[in-house]
Image (cartoon, rainbow, N blue to C red; front, side, top):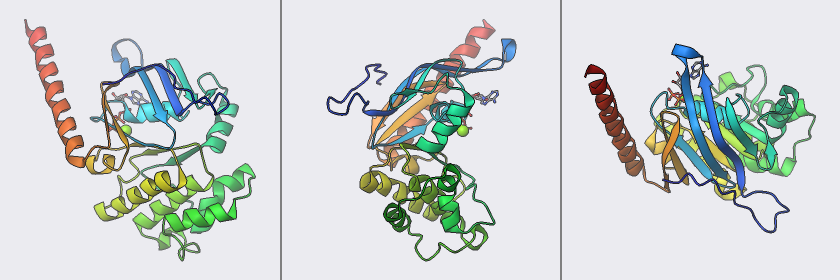
Length: 272
Ligand SMILES: Nc1ncnc2c1ncn2[C@@H]1O[C@H](COP(=O)(O)OP(=O)(O)OP(=O)(O)O)[C@@H](O)[C@H]1O
Ligand SMILES: [Mg+2]
């Protein structure tokens, strides 16, 4: 288990960090008093640039909360979040909105496409809103990478679920964000379409140098990642590099065993 708080720095990158995003001593509490829930409990993590990171853990362990805090979609109770060299904790909403728009890409479980726009218009929409001209060569490459050539004039309702999610992936990649966050991006897809999307995400890391953080429940999905972080009760309790799906599954089962042992010990304590 690694919870190193050293901040790696490249000598030749003008002071830029090797980490695309960092969390330092992040605490996120919901509610107060009796109903207070500690969703994140002193989380320290570095998300390496150009890597595919998966976040796993039981339901309620804090995966979505961690992703939302890293992506500036939610505020922290205490601690710091950095996007590269920018501390985003403490930014005012207007700056945060602009930072999310300009530097971060998102892929959600629900594809969140606009039904009246065709695939290409959906892909370029965030850049249109930001008033940026898409780089045509890059756009062609992204469309090619996710296998959407020939489908660009179709509306979402004319596409399969897997194709719609490919549009969402292309939309996230098109603006060349520093980091893409996905919360169970394959959660609504059958296993074949899911495998396809995961393959595209993997290719975007290998061939386009993209940085990706993906929350998932699925050991098979996590096995596409370079690194898997395991959350339990709001803490990062373990990590593995380049695991197979079986290794991820085995690790998850070991946790649920450890957790139920801990719960038994707790309730034993209450009884005495
Ligand atoms: N808005 C909220 N208000 C109160 N409690 C919340 C809120 N959002 C999350 N929580 C609590 O924080 C904890 C972590 O939630 P989170 O959604 O991060 O879990 P998760 O690991 O993503 O779970 P799942 O796998 O079910 O999506 C849970 O106990 C949850 O009930
Ligand atoms: Mg969640």
